[in-house]
Image (cartoon, rainbow, N blue to C red):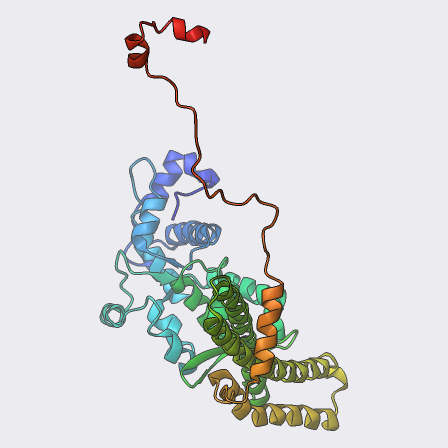
Length: 398
C-alpha cells in the first residue's frame, strides 16, 4: 500500500503522536481510557486507509511501513489488529473462507491465494498475527462486491442466466485486477447469497441475483438449457464464419489454377467449395433455428410479470425443442451430416469454371513484347578518342 495520505490532524502534534505510537498496556484494565483512546484513533484510521487504497487484505508489516512517522513505527499496531479481529473488522483468510458454503470452495480453493500451510500456521497461532499474514478487510470486500453487482446489472451479460468463468473475469476485470481479489469478492457475493456456483461437466458456471430480488435463485433446468443454447449459437456462428472464409479461399485458389492453365486442379478446388457451401447451408439452418428459440425465450423473459402456467409450459416446450436439436447440432458441428462429393454435378462445376474464365481480369492495351534485339547507341570510349588524336574536351562539342 501507499504511505498515509491525507494525514489526520493529530499527525503533526509530536506530543500526541508520541502517546499514540507507544505500546499498549498488557490489558485494558490497567488504564482503560488510554487503551480506548488509542483504539478509537487507530481502528478508524486503518479502515479508512485500506478503503482509500482499495486493498482487500492488509498485513502488519504493510501498516507499519505506511504509518511510519519520523523514522518511527507505531508500537501497538499488532494489538489494534488483534482487537479488530475479535470484532470482525478484520478476518483471517481461513475464517473468511469457512463462512462460505462448500459449493464455491470446490471451484475457488485451487485458485485462491490462500494456501493450506497458511491455514495451519493460523490454527497454531490462534489470535497471534504474523508480520506478513494477510488479513481480509470485510468493509473493502463488501464495497467491491457491491461494485461487481452494480457492474453486472448494467452490463449486457445481465440477460444471460448463467456466466462462464471467462465471462465473470471479463465482467470484473477493472474492479478486481488480480485473481486473489476476484476470488475474495466472489466469496463475499456468495456469502451474501448474491451469486451461486454450479458445476456441470467440468465447467464452472455462476448465476447472479436478478434485479431487485434479495437472494439468488438456485440454478434451474431452464437456466442450463438457455446457457447451452447460447453456447451452441456462439459455436455455430464461429463455424459459419470459418466455413465462409474457407469458401472464399477455395474460390481464389480455383482462379489461381485457371491462370496457370491447370483446369483439373481448378475443378478440384471448386468441388471442395461446393462441399463447403453445403456445410454453410446446414450451419446457417441450425443457427437460425437456435436463434429463433432464443428470441422466443427472450420474449417470455420480457413478459415475466404476465407469465402464466401456459406460458411456463411453452417455455419448457421450447427447452425441449432445444434438447431434440442437440443430436443434429452435434452432427453438423462435427461435419458428419455432410455427404461426399459423389453426387456433385460435374456439368455445374464446368459451367462455373467457364464463368470464372470469362470473368478473369485480363490486362489489355499494353504493347507487344519485342522479339528482336534492342539496339542502343554506345558512347565512344575516351581511349578510342585518344587513338584518333582527339581530346576529351573536343568530344563535348559533338
